[in-house]
Length: 367
View 1 (cartoon, rainbow, N blue to C red):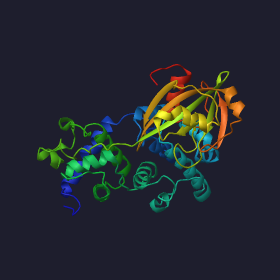
View 2: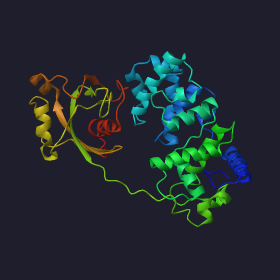
View 3: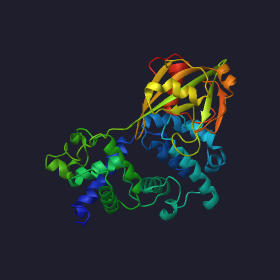
View 4: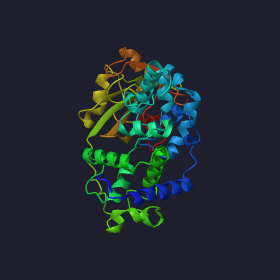
C-alpha cells in the first residue's frame, strides 16, 4: 500500500483491469479519438476545456479543415483563428493555442516536444494540458487531473474538502501518478475523465453501474453524495456597457478590442463602460462625440462571464450622426469596420456580441 493512497497492489491492478475494460466498452466515438495526430489531439484538448463535448464536435472538424497542421495555424492571422473559434468562448484558449503553435514551429521544428518539461513551457500548457496532451497524444506516462478526475479521487479516497483547492489538486496529481498504469496513461486518463463525466458526476453518483464501486471508500462509508462538498456559488460583480448599433445599408459598425484586457482581440459593437446605468444614453452620447442617440435602448442582453455578470444596453445610432461629429476609433478600440451580420465576421465575436446582433439587428427580442 502506497503512502499516497489506501489501495493495496492487488486492488490497484484490479482498478486498472476493471476501469480500462469498462472504458473500452463505453468510450464514445469522438472524432479526436479516431486520430493519432498529436496536433489534432492537442486542438481537441484545448477546445474541451470548459466546453461541452457536443459543442466541441461542431467546431473541431471545421477548425482542422482551415488549420490542418501546426504550421498552418502558426502562419494564420490571429483574427482568422479567432473567427474560426467564434462561438466556442473562452478566447484566451485560442490566443494561447495560436502562440503555442508559433513556438512549436520555431523552437521544435513543428513537432510537439516529448519532454514534459519542454512541453510545459508552451503557452497554455499548465499541469493538466501538459499531462493530457502528453499522455494521449505523445504516449507519455503522465497523470491528467481535471475537475472530473479530482471528484473521482475524492470519493475513492474519502478525502475531505474541496478537491479543486491548490493543496488538494497537488495531492491528487501525486495520487494520479502513483496509480498510473505504465504504458497506458492516455487510456487511463480518458477512462477516469469518462467516469467522472458520466457515472461519478457532481450530483448523486450512479454507483450501481460503476465498474470500480467496490474500491470507493466514500461509497463504503455511505458518503458518496456528500463528498466532495458542494461549492457555494460566489456572487459575481456586475459590469454594464452601453453599445452603439450603427447601420449603413445592410452593414453594421464593429470595433476591435486591443490584444490585452476584456474581450482581447475580439470584434463587437462599439461600447463604453458605464459607471451609472441610469445615465447610459448620455454616457454613450458623450463617448461618441455628441452624436444623437435614442433615449431608450433598442435591446438589452446579458451574459455570465467567468468572473462577472455582463449587461449590454444597445442604442440605435444613425450613421450620419457619426459622420456629423467626425467620430473616429476611440479607446478602448484599435480598429473599426463595416460588416454584414449575416457573413463571416472579421475576427472572433464574443457570445454577448452574437446575442446583441440577434436581438438588435435580426429582431430576436429574446436576446
